[in-house]
Length: 491
Image (tube, rainbow, N blue to C red; front, side, top):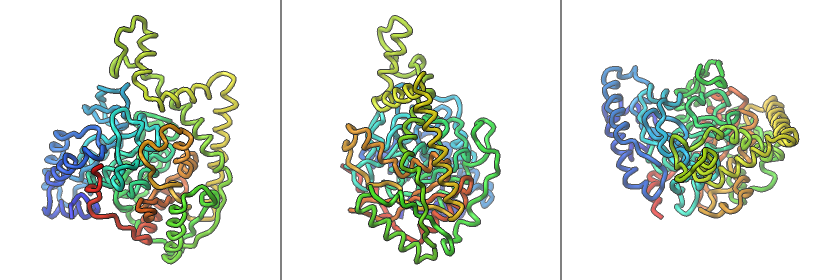
């Protein structure tokens, strides 16, 4: 089996015993990307020279530090194209940022580099992370490795596809309303959204600043815990990053599900699920009971309003964040523009895709005089109700479980002309984002041959506990991925 398909702990052990080198791992990854990514479209740019330099440095570090080296030293990772890397073009999959080469590195990316991880390149995503299918990228399509005529989910679809296809053993993504968990579910991998404020957003090109969160994609729950503990923690560069110490998830990771009370919200399973997703979730629940968990009904009544509130709050914050994008220093510009107004209008029209323009207009309207109280303020009040629902529910259970997505991966192009249908892809993930709690998606099985994810959530800042439950669910379900899924990717 390819080293890239093995758990990170096995790769780390092999790197320390000399069974494999970081250089060999990286060359294998680069070879697989060159061979297979033309069909998948997971990467926007592959940083070959940087990866080779970092791999060589990791090998030197491992030779000197041995067992004392960080456990990610020498491990290849992929980075979503909304996280800045110094000296590497970072576009957020938008033409308005074409040519933008950051002079700084995002904290999450820097912490991986300091741990000796090797960056393979930037993964495709929906433009400015706005989307649920990665079809809104200004540059290319990304296909689902399980079925090349299907979407990988979004907005972090490139990161999810890269891990599912074995092009990278781990990747960073971002989650605003489900952009880690939903593509993880659709691609059959593990995706973890930490508590809001647990991982620094410094160096993240913002979509919605009160919701955006950085987290990992991996092939196992244990791997997600290893990435999480490396990137999490206080950061003086990010005022929204919590100063609370990070609880190491590794000591409790393998404690299992015995005796845990898992809440099942009726609002998430009452209706709206595809029959195949419903069957997989019900079968998963039976397996969790057999593993020693107790399933208890809980109610999250404000869930019915969460999606509408999200699509006021997130576009409003996007409208504010993207006001700085003027196309003057990079991007398409506006050839022939005479006045500054013509330059700005032309650059923004050419630089922003239709979905981004749609959300900017929605957000600007919601923030405008005479509508602020009716829309934005009321949406924030709904957000408070959603958070209170979760707080009450967690008082009686140890964690909450639910399907991650109401459907399996849909076909490319199927929802592009129907924004409301596309937004419904996030109906089961958005409430957890509004509440700011940690949530993970783990593979639960297949419906019609396509992956289904099961979502696990815990109280705010109980990230270690969330990862423990997710790992316990993973072990109880025993869902195995085909050993080399990437070779299905050719359209």
